[in-house]
Length: 141
Image (cartoon, rainbow, N blue to C red; front, side):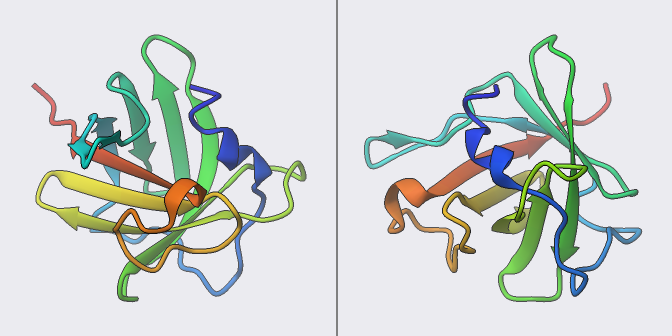
C-alpha cells in the first residue's frame, strides 16, 4: 500500500481556508477501493485497500490486514468540484496532496494531484500526475 500512496508522502498541514469535516459530510465513512478499467488503464489502488474518513478529520488508509496509516484531511464541499486536501500528520511534509472528489450514491471518486497541483476534472487527461481512485461505500452487514 505504501507504494500506491507514495505521492502522499509529500504532504503536511493543509491551508486554513479549508473546512474540517461537518456532520453529514458525504466523505465520512469507510470506502473500499475497486479496480475500474477505462480505455486500457486501471485505477489505483487495487482491490483490498480501504479509506476511512472520520468526522474528526482523519483519513485512515488500510491494505488488507495491515495496520492503517493515519493521515489528516480537510474539505471544501461547496466548491465545484468539491475539494479535499490530504496531509501527513506532524512536521514531515511540506504541502498537502490536493484533490477533488465526487460522491454519487455509494461511489466515491477521488482525483489527487501528485505534483502539488489540484486536478480540475475527473478525466484522465492529466496523465501520470493524477491518481484517480474509485471506491464503494462499505455498509455494515
